[in-house]
Amino acid sequence: MLSTERVFMGCIGLQMLYGWTSMILGYSQNGYFYETLAMFEEMVNARVRPNDITLVSVLSACGNLGTLVLGERIHGFLDENGYGLNLFVGSALIDMYCKCGVVMVLVLEPPHHFPLFFSLLPLHKPNQQ
Image 1 (spheres, rainbow, N blue to C red):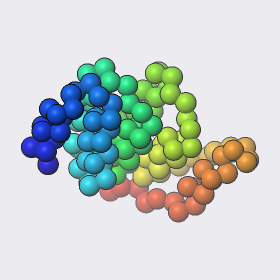
Image 2: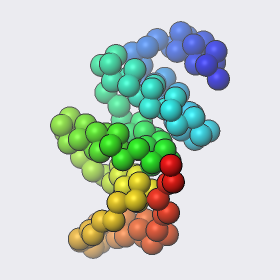
Image 3: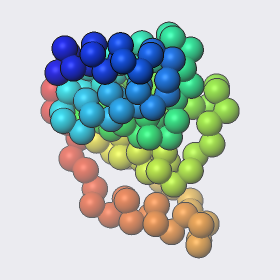
């Protein structure tokens, strides 16, 4: 997959959001979680602003690896850079925290966050390391 990454990124240019997001999403969905996080770090260092899809993929990688400290850093990145918590990013944060073994109590105001409640129902087991 690394050779594909080089060709892909070389063809579309390093500054294109969709190229970065496609690579990060592909790594995350195929279980390459360390590569997901490394690619995200490169993206941020290249000063490309991630979108919601990028952030959901990165939070998913943190949760699957059980890296709470890094997940909290990503959460801080969201706050520091003015990202709002829409349904997708909010659900990804809940998923990451649950997979890392953090128990949360949320106060949800229906009807806007009603689907978010259902993301809590299939409680995740914490990752074992």
